[in-house]
Length: 375
Image (tube, rainbow, N blue to C red; front, top):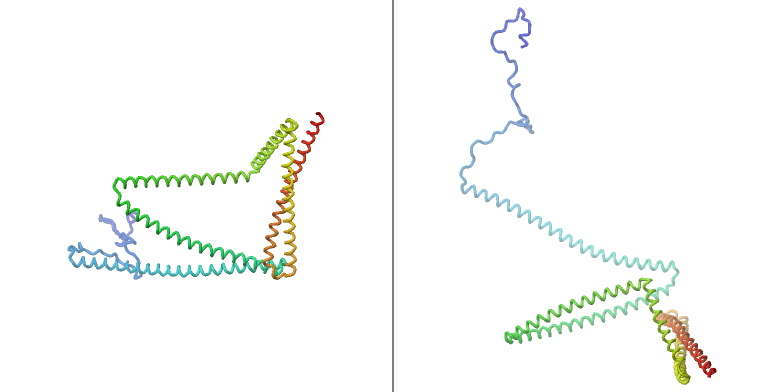
């Protein structure tokens, strides 16, 4: 120890055989846990001591009554909480319905304003493009008349639908009455006849189902066929092939006609003359018919042109009362355009047929002349 290592002085006593003295305090060696002495707002608090004793030993009626009362209070608290939640949900639903109705009203207003804006934009475009107000008014009246016609047509359709529904309800009532009568008759049948009826009824149901299945298959095949035809029409190569096929058929027919004509040339002269006369009569009749149709078409064309001139003259004289005539003019113009387009094609076909007939007659006459010269 430190005292033993120190040099003994005159004023220091020699140590005895007693144990070494401990000069440290008692609190220095005490083990203190800070967790067991928590610091609160009142300063350092001591360790709480648990209650001693085993607690309640006997569960009497009062204990169960208090326990039941506690659980009842908890249930009432939960019920109150759930009622409050239900009230909140109902309020939210009412608010949602109100907002939804308001949203629908606003949507209607928006659609209305969008339509008005589109009308204003259209009017502005017409103004910028220099369209006359009379033309706009005429277009408006035209559209209005079309809308009135469509509205009247829809009203008629609605009335027809109502009448048809009335008839359907009447027929359904009659069918139901007939079914009741049939049921009454079936109840009067013998068991054997009733079984036979049920068997026939099952067969009818099965056949009806098979018919429905086959009808669906037919519709599916028809749809596939329509799609294939659409693809065929849209395919350029296939269209070309179809055109070549039709052209081949036409050329084959012409070849057969030429072979027939060649065979006719090999016939005896009197028979050739008779056939030639018959063909000439037939060709002359066809030519007369073509000339007649051509004349009628020209008359119709002149009539249409005269009608157009009269309508133009009326429009020039009465520019404000031209809505009905404007529609007639459009209709006549469409008819004339269609007639002119088809007229040129038909005229070309007729002229081609006439030329072919003339060439055939010329060749036949030359052949007959050559035969007469040889004789």
